[in-house]
Amino acid sequence: MTTIAMIGTTEILIIGGILVLLFGARKLPELARAAGSSISQFKRGLKDEETRLEAGADEKGAKKELP
Figure 1 (cartoon, rainbow, N blue to C red):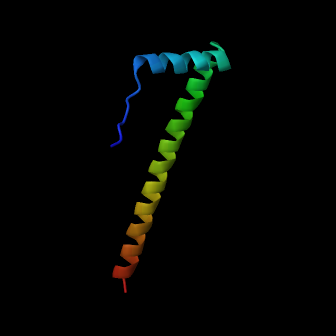
Figure 2 (figure 1 turned 90 degrees about the horizontal axis):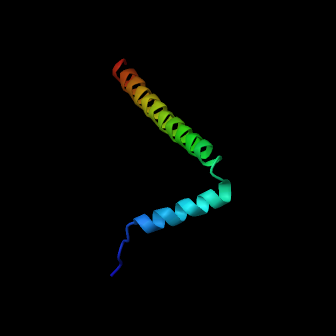
């Protein structure tokens, strides 16, 4: 039987401390901002692709009905 462990406060503090040691306190906000921007661009790209696929499916359906 496997147990799924949740990340606790101690683990989050340890990870945060390691990040501060690796990147420095001044660089962390910059990294977080860049990560947030990347995630939003990725989501926007997924939405755009989804609308393209839907538009393509609509066009194919309309072409089949014409003849």
